[in-house]
Amino acid sequence: MPSTAPTRLRLELQALGENTNTWGDTRLIAAHQRLEESVADVVTKTITGNVTLTSSNYVADEARAAVLKLTGSPGATYKVTIPSVEKTYWVHNATDASQTIGTSGGTAATVRSGVLAFVYCDGTDTTVADTKLNKIAAPDASVSFNSQKITSLATGTDSTDAANVGQIAAIVTPY
Image 1 (cartoon, rainbow, N blue to C red):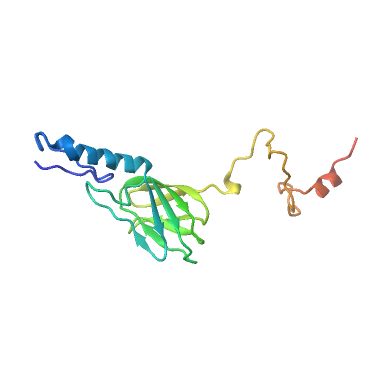
Image 2: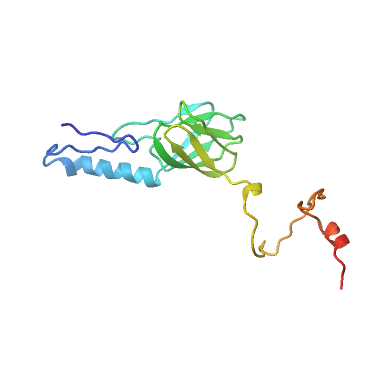
């Protein structure tokens, strides 16, 4: 029975009794290198249009990387196509526009320009952990901004809206 490659990381899984006295020379080292790539490798892709990450069994490729750094000034949103397998990526979108990442057939996730986002693929669809301010739970204690101020708040129109200093002064009676 010959070696096989699992679908996610595409490492060489040696068959029983295969490669006697030669497994450690190059194949085991190569398998360890593929594991290292999946945990710590950074692949930089210059975005000028839609791209598909390379994906190959047993050898270095782009899709196995832990981090994808997207660079360039495409001025538009393009798609980075990944293999249709379960995997997570850190995606650093250093381009001047939002970019999408997804499989060829599923729902793609959008990574905003300038954001480092955690992207999860379930084998079909991708999801990005890109928490927006309106999705963050309200703090249950004081929040320090390192002695910095929040300025230029818009005038609130609802009792739950943010208020500026002038609005607060109008409703707070000084002692």
